[in-house]
Image 1 (cartoon, helix red, strand yellow):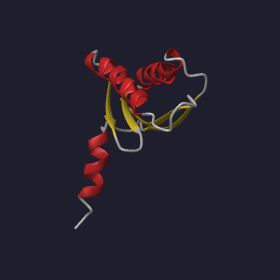
Image 2 (tube, rainbow, N blue to C red):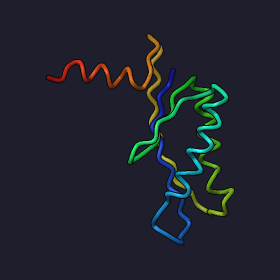
Image 3 (cartoon, one colour):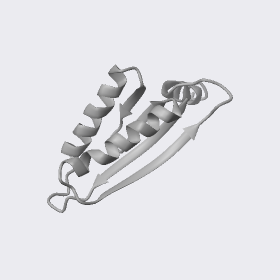
Image 4 (cartoon, rainbow, N blue to C red):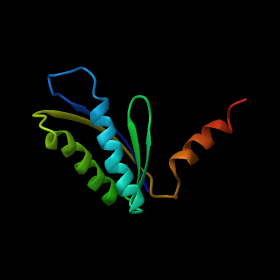
Length: 103
């Protein structure tokens, strides 16, 4: 199970706000979640995607391409992948592991 932290930055030149592109990314990820392929979580600074690595790569390609389909000519995408294979765990498991050490 992989957890991927992704930031997509459409360089449309029209506005410094990218919220409309972020919303489209979330719609794509929600479709894939409904298909049972991935889970995801929007944060104020990025989006987390969780699933089998192959399915995550499909999601990444789809969301990276999304701004291009809206007419954007340049997109910068930053990706960090945590692919742990010694045991199954989910995004919230990582949070719980930290919280149990907090007083």
